Length: 580
Figure (cartoon, rainbow, N blue to C red):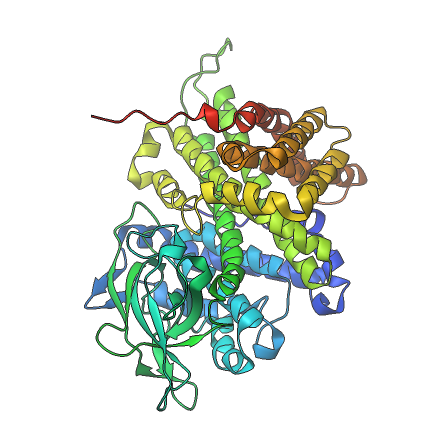
C-alpha cells in the first residue's frame, strides 16, 4: 500500500496544460511563482504520503462509529486533520481578505488530488468545503462572509452540501424540507428549517468543533420543482457574539450508512428541527437556491472528477509494483523457460500502460478545466465558458477512468487482487461511488447535450472541437475522432430531446476522449522537445512519450467507434420486457 507522490508528473501538467506560469503573469496570481508552485506540489505530496496514506487502510477496516447522534472517526484521523489545518493546506485558493492565500484554484485541485490519492475516504472531509466557500463568495452577504469564511478557509470548520432526501434521489425539485421565516424576536430574519437529508458526506464527525451545512429547502408558498428552492446556511452550532460555536442548533445525525467503499468517510442521515428549533440563514434570494447551489455543485463535480485521478494513480502504482515483483511463467516464444516477473508479459504490459495513460489523461483533463476556471477569474470570458463545457466531461469521464483503472489493478494482481489484504480491492470499492454522487454520470451526459450543447447555438462545443482538430494536425487518429465528434455534434443540435439523450453518454465519452487526446498530444510534443533539449528528468520524459503515444494510438481510435451508438437515437432503446 505504499504511495509515492507523482510530483514530476503534476508539475509537468501544471506547466504545459494548466499554463500556471501564464496565470502568475497576472497580479491576482502573482504569488504563484515557479518556486511557490513547486513548493506546494512537493509539500502536499510529502504531507499526503507521510500523514494521510498510513491511515488509508485504517479507515477502510476501522470505520467511523455512530453513537447517539455523535460520530467518532477512526484512530489517527483527528490528529492528521489537525496537521492539515495547521499547515494551511485548506487555504490555498481562499480569498485573501478572509484569510486565504489567493493562489489559483488549480493548485488547490492538486492539493485535493494528493490527499485523495493517499486516502480517498478521509479526503472527502475537505472536498466540499471549497464549494461552500465559493457559494458564499458568490451569493453570501458581507456579514456572512466575515462570520463563516475564515474558519471554512482554514478548515477549522468543514462545509457540507445537503440536497438529497429519502425517495427523492437526483430529483432535487421533489424535496420536502421546509424553511419558515422568523418574523419576531431575537432570531427575526432567520429561518426555521425542518426536514431530513440523506447521503451527507461528513455530515457529522469529531474532527472540527463546528460543521457548516448548506441546505436546500422550500419556503411556504414557493412553487413546486426547482424554481421554488432556496439555499440556507445551517450550522451545527450557532455562534455567540465572539463568533465561537456555542448554541445547539437542532441539527442531528440520525445514522451513518454502511457502504461498499470510502469507509473512512461518514455518510450521514441528517435531521433538522425535530426536537428543537433549527435556524438557518438564507444564502442569496428566496427561490434562488439552485443558482447558488450550482456554484457549489460545479466545484464539487470537478473535485469528484479529481477522485478518478486519485484512485487511478494509487491503483496504477500498486499494480506496477506488484507486477515488477510477481514471478510467474516464462515469456511466450522465448527459448529460455525461466519464469519472469509478470510485467514482462505483453498483456500485463498492455494493462499497466493503459492504467497509466488513462490516469494521465484524467489528470490533464481535470487540471485543464480547473485552469479555465482560474483564467475566467482573470477576466477571460472564453475560458470561463470553456470551463462550463468541461465540467460534465471531467466529472463523468474521469470517474469512469478511475473505475476502469481500479478494475484493471485487480486484474493485474490476479487472484490476489480479489483478496482484501492486498489493498487492490479497496481501490475498486472506493472508486465506485464517484460516478454516482454529485449528479450521476448519466446526468452529466444529459447536462452536456441539454444545457451545454445549446449554449451559443452549439458554438462553444464546436469551438472546443476546433481546438482539438487544430492540435491534431499530425495525429491521424485524433483527427478522425475530432471529425466524428463534429458530425455527432451537428446531428445532436438538430435532434429531438429523446434522440439526444439516447446518445448522450457515448457522445460524452467521445468528446472527453478527444479532449484528453488533444491534451496528451500537447504533452507528447512538450516531452519530445524537452528530451531533445536535454531539459528535465530523462526517464520521466521517455515514459511520458510512451504513455501519450499509447493513448493516441490505442485509446483514441476506440472512442471513434462510439459514433454509431451516439447517433442511434431513442428508437434503438426499446422498452424492456417485464420480469415475471
